[in-house]
Length: 353
Ligand SMILES: *[C@@H]1O[C@H](CO)[C@@H](O)[C@H](O)[C@H]1NC(C)=O
Ligand SMILES: *[C@@H]1O[C@H](CO)[C@@H](O)[C@H](O)[C@H]1NC(C)=O
Ligand SMILES: *[C@@H]1O[C@H](CO)[C@@H](O)[C@H](O)[C@H]1NC(C)=O
Ligand SMILES: *[C@@H]1O[C@H](CO)[C@@H](O)[C@H](O)[C@H]1NC(C)=O
Ligand SMILES: *[C@@H]1O[C@H](CO)[C@@H](O)[C@H](O)[C@H]1NC(C)=O
Image (tube, rainbow, N blue to C red; front, side, top):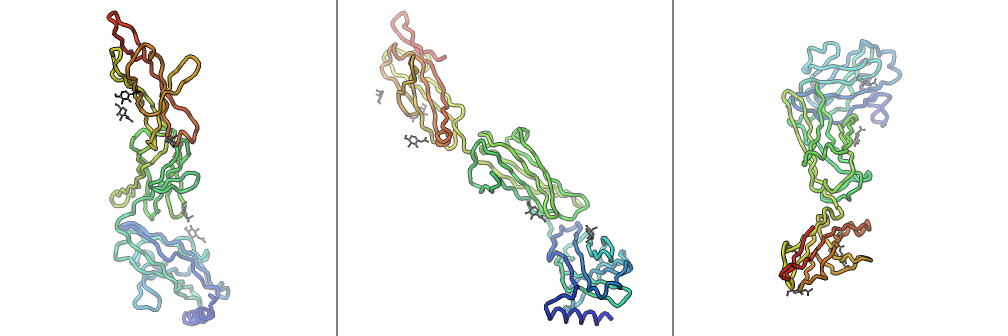
């Protein structure tokens, strides 16, 4: 009887139709050595054989390729404890479910597998489609990607301060009695605690953890590391990290005077401005704060006044600009006071407030 169905199927295949016999299973599945393998599977039969299919039908899994060499029964639903594999078959035959989990797979279990249905009636059929089980000895690293406005940002690309980003860690889900766990860490450490939203989710194939936050200059050169922990017979951890590159306007612009302290009249003094920015190329401008307005004195980081005299006393303002600040049209400035006092013996000194 089986033969007639097989011939029937072959005849149908020649005509390019499946006669209602069909099976849905992945072509390939990866399993971690020492762990389990889960094969989602459903089948269909030709309507003519519907009445043959009862819940007493046997669902059998074979290792090998149908009609090609030796094949071996690895699991038989009628005696699940006698096959080569210990495992569990899900659903029922009438639900047309052939989903199976094999426990504790090893390297030698790699290869092709196929499904066979045996009813008490005429219908006894091996489905020729195979699934390939690949055994990997160590879980892969997770993947870390950065998104800005849903767009993936390349590794070396810079993101703008103030923008909202999503740092995503994803890892393939493997069959396991204990699910894998994703955790984040950061360097500097405190960045993870600062207004970062963490979201975890998973679908059939991947476990995903998102970090959503607004970029500040403090994220420049910061590193975020995602660790996946697999609880197999022993704990296996794999990590991947991502370093952020942030473009930011000048920060902590400051000025200082050299030499500080007493300066003799007629000596020179240098006012120096500095700032932190990315891109680090900065245009500095020095202004003199007169009573009415800021009077530009010179561009450049250092303002040197030769031949000092009492009229040089007053407030000086320095601004620092990089391309980011030009874009944002901001003005970041710092001020410094030079105060000249006539000394009893005619000397002057600068006082830095
Ligand atoms: C088959 O069984 C699996 C495991 O119980 C279940 O997730 C799946 O939904 C079932 N499929 C059908 C078509 O019933
Ligand atoms: C699971 O999610 C990932 C990332 O969002 C996606 O690439 C993949 O196609 C999804 N898989 C399924 C089965 O939905
Ligand atoms: C300005 O002065 C500082 C401190 O003396 C020095 O490091 C810097 O190179 C100077 N900058 C320029 C453009 O000369
Ligand atoms: C101050 O003196 C230095 C060295 O003599 C000279 O290079 C510089 O041009 C002078 N600066 C001004 C503003 O006169
Ligand atoms: C600095 O000033 C020059 C001249 O105005 C300009 O061409 C350049 O783009 C400026 N650079 C920055 C970083 O703002």
